[in-house]
Amino acid sequence: DASADASADASADASGGKAKDKEPIYTKEFLNEKYITGPNSTRTFEQDIFLPFLSECNMLDWDGDSDDNNNNKNDDNDGLQLVACFAVAGPVKNNTAAMTNLGGEDKDKDKGGASENTEILINGNDIEQSTIGRLKYITKCKLVNDFVGQGYGLLDLDLNKEVIELVPGSIDAVMKAEAKDDDDHHHPLGPKACVGAGTGLGECFLTTSSLHPDDGYECYPTEGGHVDFVPRDALQVKLLNYLKQKFDQPNRISVERVVSGIGLANIYEFLAKEFPKLVNKDIHSEFENAGALQGKVVGVNANGDSPDELCKKAMDIMMSAYGAETGNCALKYIPTGGLYVSGGLTPKNIQFIKGEDSPFMKAYKDKGRMSGLLDSVPLFAVMVEDLGLRGARVCALREYNSMKNTFSV
Image (cartoon, rainbow, N blue to C red):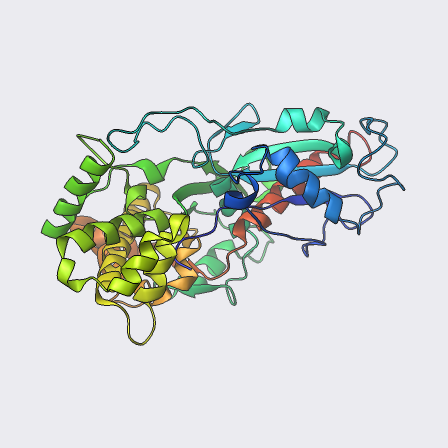
């Protein structure tokens, strides 16, 4: 779909000689709309997602313990211990995260709306100390920004199977840069960057690591999705003014308001008012009743053999803005180790991204005097949607390896 589901991915590395295995032993998707913000939710990830996940994960040796008794923290290092990493949608500070798109005081609220503080927090330090159910087995809990998870997930990609080259020769360029020479030494590795639109717009970058030199790269978060949206033509100027009024922002609008599943819905809403004669009544009715999945309605109807004209126009605008922002990242980081376009919107709408004449690529390369610089940047569309889960595993494994010399896990 065009609007990525808000979901929580959990990754845990456990002892038993299989900590280095890449294949997950159990996965499940939890929709935040149902489990966290739903009417029967406690609005805590520990109670509504993490505990149910561990309760269903019965392929681990839980020392014969049920998930609801003997609530003593497993701190004697003799039994099963878990190293957990959660990649969460929001900035992380002191191993705690406030979920950006799940409550909190919304300073961009529509005109007339009252601000309400309904902040939802995840505290990794509290989880480490928890004695509730199977949470007591978690010895180490690390929180990372969800897009940091995506960035570390890049290190697990198979470039021959899981990406599409958007610039010819990109795979060969990266493979050559990362290959060892005849003396078994790596060439200097250039930075990597990742831009991905789904429910929101995330951006991160990676450089060769001084903290973990054997691991190659370290990922750093950004809030690049909240830089200013810059219109590229007269219609987009009207869109900008419409969004400034909608979100009561007199001076600027975040690019995420345009480049995301929610952004796609915003664009369609604007176009429906700007071009009422192009509105398909059935599609518009479905859109109005779709709630958080409005972007999905637009995306589905923009694709296919007979796309809806208004939905396709909305997708063209979003992809143009997406390509422009990706090009901005290329100029900022000059990521000769690869620039990766990820997120749920990429594989579902790849025909709007790949190809020299796509709205994405035309905007990406339209950088005036600096357009030629982009030829040195390998560019990929990531065609898998589990980068966050893979990155959480990479981070959990790094934590596991750093703890091995301290005590057995």
